[in-house]
Image 1 (tube, rainbow, N blue to C red):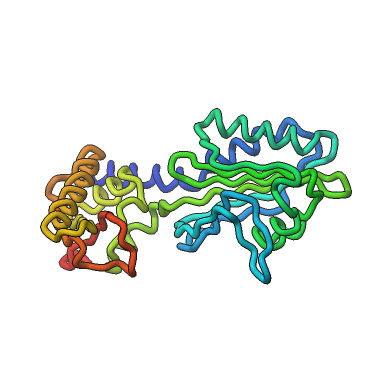
Image 2: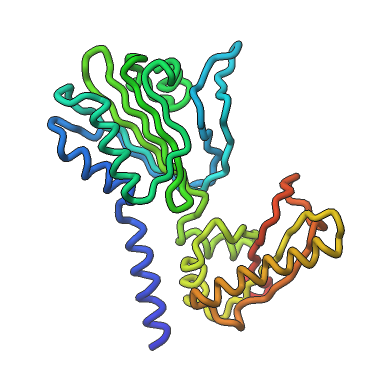
Length: 280
């Protein structure tokens, strides 16, 4: 009975993954109020990659394109969509309605610009998004980026000289897709726990009740004794979150390495999960 229940829960979660994201649904809902819309392209990439997150206008310096505020973020998933809309409504109206919808869902805007304050539309289209179709009029462009539920969102709306409007949005997540988690663990990888929701960990571990996962705390305090203590505390905090999510106590072990296990020069305090070699 328990095995059947676990299988049903896993099937439900996996089927939910195939549903449109909240961003997808909200953009579709908003654009339904505009005539002559069409979806030109959409992608969903689930391979780890680096995301160029721009929080200011992009500008050309020599042969490079840079921004005053930018980050290179390692993400696990990236969703995008590109829409074309008629000129019956202004690009500003379209942009504002999407942003209002996102904010109603909890979107926290970190940066936005409009018209010439965004810089060159050509730079955004060709050198940031790699979509020449988005090359429009500098005075008729809008850009916004922010966070929602830990995910990055980007919106770019522009009107071209033909008076056609284009809407492009991105959603980048540092959390992986649940169906990849078992493979990561079975490969022996040390998986940063924040790459997956606690509920995802619970589903996978409940579906494999014989598995035992070690939570390893990393900390970079100057004093080794303190680093080891802080690392263990971090791992214990994750263990408590997992137990609350439904992971059995017998499936969790806690260890700490402090700063003794450098992570590709990444000196960020974190907790990683490793499947016991006995179960690989």
